[in-house]
Image (cartoon, rainbow, N blue to C red):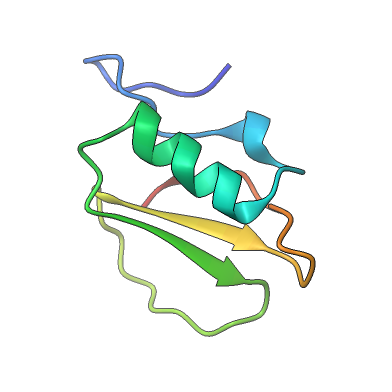
Length: 73
């Protein structure tokens, strides 16, 4: 089961590991419309270390398959 905040908004999507990145992005945006950004990142690409409560990074491999649990931050 995905982690939720006090107001029952999803903050993690473990069920999306193994799914296509584009599908994961659409699912996350639908299930938590308050997010400002849902960004797909290729594994190994450089990113900042900043934590944002309105952003989710979706880490994918070269086949566009989600490899890590997408979560707020």
